[in-house]
Amino acid sequence: MIGERDTPTGTSLYIARPLRISNPACLTCHSSVEVAPKTLVDRYGPANGFGWNLNEVVGAQIVSVPMDVPLQRASRSFNVFMTAQVAVFVAVGVVLNLMIWLVIVRPVTRLSSLADRVSQGEMEAPEFDSGSKDEIGNLAASFNRMRTSVVQAMRMLDN
Image (cartoon, rainbow, N blue to C red; front, top):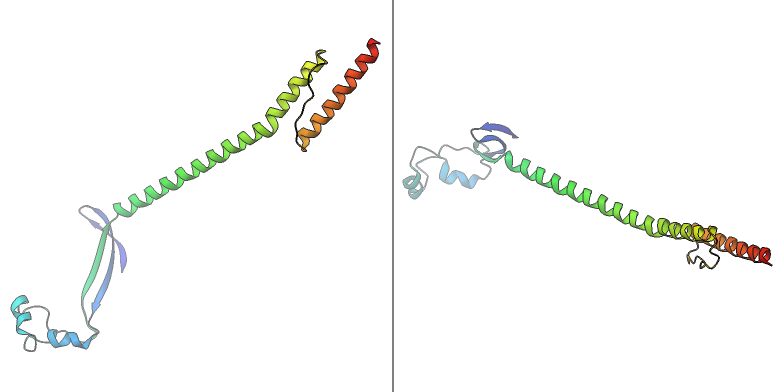
């Protein structure tokens, strides 16, 4: 049997198993007081532990654990698990934000700053070198072609 029981210290979980006489050798000592060894009778007395029969249940082994123990372990495991989950999500969020900033925000901000300088007439502004083959790299190449065209058009107007 497995279950819960109320005790003065709180709820306890228990498991109980029957103690069954399945070994005939046990009966040489425990069948009757007359056949039992004298040392056994002297130590435990003639009142208990005799009259057993084969396959008879003579007792129970009960193991009881306070409910607080498994609940504390479960709570501690849950807290460790949730802390680990939060840490993983925070780490992934930080890494993703850092990657977005490095791959997208920083190059677009630099390109925007350079476009602003060119739009204000600073034709000596350097070319934007992104060095990438992605969409930001394509935008930078297009901006550099446009900047070159604007510089050439301005030179043609000056002449």
